Image 1 (cartoon, helix red, strand yellow):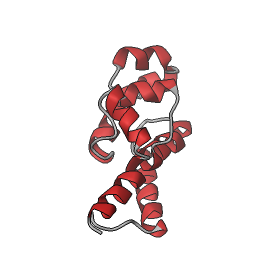
Image 2 (cartoon, one colour; image 1 turned 120 degrees about the horizontal axis):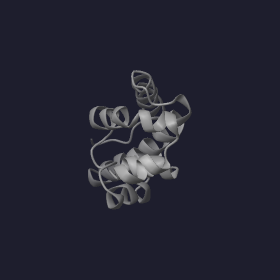
Image 3 (tube, helix red, strand yellow; image 1 turned 60 degrees about the vertical axis):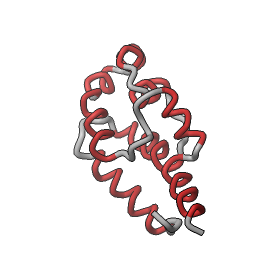
Image 4 (cartoon, helix red, strand yellow; image 1 turned 45 degrees about the horizontal axis):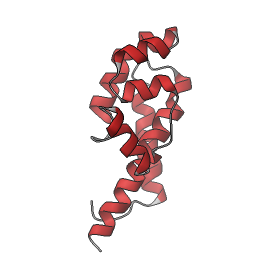
Length: 114
């Protein structure tokens, strides 16, 4: 990763994430927030924060019925399609948000190679 992605490349990556989300039982109303978190490190609601932080007890307590029934699919989606380093613990999630998500990661990586 030695260059900053163009707007078109980010758009394609976003579209790819959105298309892959449709293969899971993750509710449609959660897609935008999850993709924005991955791409830009945007803050999420308490349920998604719990999922990303690997806190099953909080996820079950905070999720509505649809999200509770989709917990396994959230885990599968993150494992198979989300960048390493954007989920796993509260500390990792906080760092991802602070670092401005995938976009910030790519910008930092490109700066190393200039």
